[in-house]
Each structure stands twice: as C-alpha cells, then as structure tokens.
Amino acid sequence: MTTAASDLAVPDGPGVRRRELAALGVACVSTILVIGLVAAINLAVPMLAASPLHPSAAQLLWIVDAYVLVFACLVIPGGAFGDRFGRKGALAAGLVVFAAGAALTALAPGIGILLAGRVVTGLGAALVLPNCVGVLVHATAPARRGSALAVWGAVSGLGGLFGNLGGGALLSSGHWQLLFWVVSPLALACTLWVLAGVARSDRSPRSLDPAGTVLLVLATVALLIGIIEGPEQGWDSPLVIGAFALSAVVWAAWVLVELRVQHPLLDPRLFRIPLLRAASLGMFVTFFGSFGLFYVNASLLEYGRGFSVLGTGFAILPMVLPLAIGALFVPALAKRIGLTLTLLFAFLFIGIGLVGLSSATQAAYSIYALWLVLVGCGFALALPVLTMELTSALPAQQAGVGGGLQSATREFGSALGVAIVGTVLTDAFSAALPPAAQGQHTVAAALAAAPGSHTAIIAAFVTGAAVALRLAGGVTLVAGAVVLLTARRAGHTR
Image 1 (cartoon, rainbow, N blue to C red):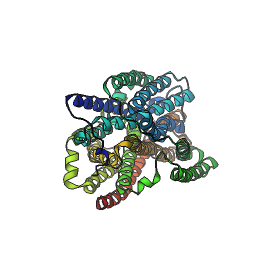
Image 2 (image 1 turned 90 degrees about the vertical axis):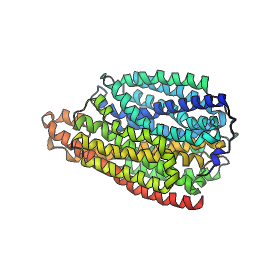
Image 3 (image 1 turned 60 degrees about the vertical axis):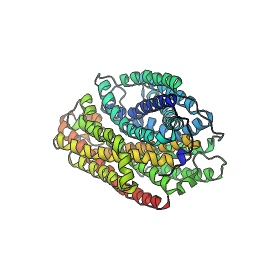
Image 4 (image 1 turned 120 degrees about the vertical axis):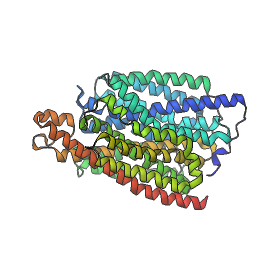
C-alpha cells in the first residue's frame, strides 16, 4: 500500500486518542445513517406502490434513485467543499440539510414534493459521506489511520444492513413517513456530536469547479433518465435515445473541461494511477451488486415469500456476520495474501452468490440465506481493502476529494445498480404477466387490473427478480475480472 495518505502528522497522546474515537464514532454513525436510508427505502417500495400516491414503475425507481443520484453527482463537490471551507463545518451542515430533506419527505402530499425531499436529503448526504473520511483522516494519527479507515469501510458496508433492519422495524408500523420522521432527529443529534467532539482541520486553498460540477450532474441525470424510462417509454423512443446521446456528449465535455481548468473537481489524469483506477472500479462494482440486490430482495421477500416488512428487514441478517467479522481480520489477511487474491475471492463470492440467489427464489429460505452468507463474505473482503487502497492513493491534503471519489464510486454503483437491475426486473416481470394483466409495470397495478390472477402475477414477479439477480451476478463477475487485471498491474507498479 502506498503511504500518500499518511504524510499528515497528527500529535499523539490521551487527548488525541479521545478525539480519534469521537471522530471515528460520529463518522461511523453518520455513514450508517446516510447509507442506511438508501437501503431502507427499498423496503417501502411495495408500501409506496399500494399507497394513495399511486406511483408508476418509473416513479418508484425515481423515488429510490433521486436520493442516490444527487448523492452520487455531488459527493465529489461535497468533498472539495469540505477541503476548501472546513471538513467539520461541511459535515455538520450536511447533517442539517439531510435532516431537513427527511422532514420534507415525510410531509410530502404528492410525488413531486416527495421527490423534492429526496433530492434535498441527497444533497445533505453528499456533504456528509466524503467529509466523514476527511474528518477521520485528519483526526487520526498516522500509525492508526489505516485501521480506522478499515473499520469505517466495514461499517459503511453494514450501513445497508442497518437500513434494512431499522427500516423494517419502522415500516412495520404501516406508515412509510415514520422512517423519515425518525431519521431527521437522528441527523440533528449527529450534528451536535460533530460540533462537540470533532476538531477543526487545516483547509485547502483549492478553488471549486462549478463548470465541472454542472456537467457531471447533467451527464449522470441524462444516463439514468435513459435507463429508468426505457421500460415504459420504449428503448427506441426519442426520449430514451436522446438521453443516452446527451449523456455521452456531456461526459466527453466534462473530461475536456476537467483537463483544462486549473483546479478540476476530479482530474481525469488521476485515473492513470493503476491503484486508484482499480480501487474506484472495484468500489463501483461492489455497490452495483449490493444495492441491486437490496432493491430486488425487499420486494422479492415480501411478494414472493409473503414476509412482513419487519421480517424482510431481518431476513438480510445472514449477510451481517461476515461483514462484522471482516472488519477485524480482513486487513491482516489482505497483507498476507495480497490485494489481487483478496479481490479475486471477493468478486467470486459476490457474483456467484447473486447467481445462486437467482436459483433459490422459490427454494426454502435456509437455502436462500446460505447464498446471502456467501455474498456477505464477498462484501467483507472487498470493502475494507478497497477503502484503504483508494484513500491511500491520494495525499492527505486531498482527503475530502479522496473521500468524495470513494463515495462517488459507491453511489454511482448504487444508483446504476438500482436503475439497471430495477429496469431488468420491470421488463422481465411485464413480459411474464398473464394476458389479463399485460401492459402493467408494478405488482400493485397488475393486481388491480387482474385481481383473479394473483398467483400468476406473483410468479411473474419472482421470474423477473431471478432474471435481475442473474444480471447483477454476471456484471459483478465480468467487471470484477477487469478490476483484478487492473489491481495486478497496480501491484507491479507500486
């Protein structure tokens, strides 16, 4: 591992240790909060689909992805903002905005306000996550920084699982709004923790890059519009084709702008560093698979197995144990067997586990749970290693941007995982519907159109879920092979 991130000296002593623990604690809790909300909303999809809001299949995807999209697009600017104006202040401000967005979502009388609340919450999350890394890097002594980042990386993987458990408990009340009413004061409590327990760090003189930020947001929004609207509008519709074309053009423009500005939001030349390239792609692939799974798993267990929303939250527990244990031994294991071999096992476990889940959609839950354990082992191997490698590839003075890049790859992976896996699920489900329910794109709409075809409609959904899980597993295996080749090259050039 390179030592670029360890060049920032931090004085040692009892007071420093206490500040380190405070920074690690608030970074972990804040991370669980913003990542857990991504997973928790998936549990509410069946409830929202049957609610008086009557969202379409595309609107359901936007309800999930509006938060993740803003999160992904602005997380690198959020990290740069923290570097420029102060990481402690940026983290506290992000938590306040997050709390306000959650409250607005809970109060929403219709789809438009609900989506606006999700966007505001995503803006807050984009300030929170990268500055958790920035605060942690600057608060921790070099000798303990790697261990602290490994713990934070493992906890970030547990965020989705805590979201499933906590979300399941709250949503079992039958009111999806309760989820957001609880999240809001929790975020405000974390704000007080940051203000009381986190020390200020030096600021970077780097200027922000508004042009790069606007282009990054526009390119990502256009890409997801094409993916999400494809099933309902048609893949050959002007909207979908135009969205994909616009995305390609704007991505190219973003690269050109970033190569020419003095202080780019994210310099594309950084990806010439094999270590950074491998870790970024690896993080993207890992979260593509994990949040694709979370989106499918919640509805699959509720519709296909008849689990309650609380039971669905607890049904993901088999993934928890490997992630919890992994934080303790994976860093040492990776040093012993090497980065490439660790990631080989990680992507094999995730990819094979997702394909295995697709074959167990109608098997006993115990069989399904065993495949979840295998997927959890893959995440446990991947997350701490990728977190340490990506953070160490950039100097500590760019801790916010480094945290932003790490967070962006995670959230882009999450957003595209939900969008692509959800789109494939919708397509396969619609194709398998009985004649009486043809043309519908959600289970609630299909049951309303053909109430006498309940069994066939649920079977169609299970079929669609299996297809979506196979896709997620296949993408993970293929993209994981690319990560391994890049990581191997990084090993030869370090």
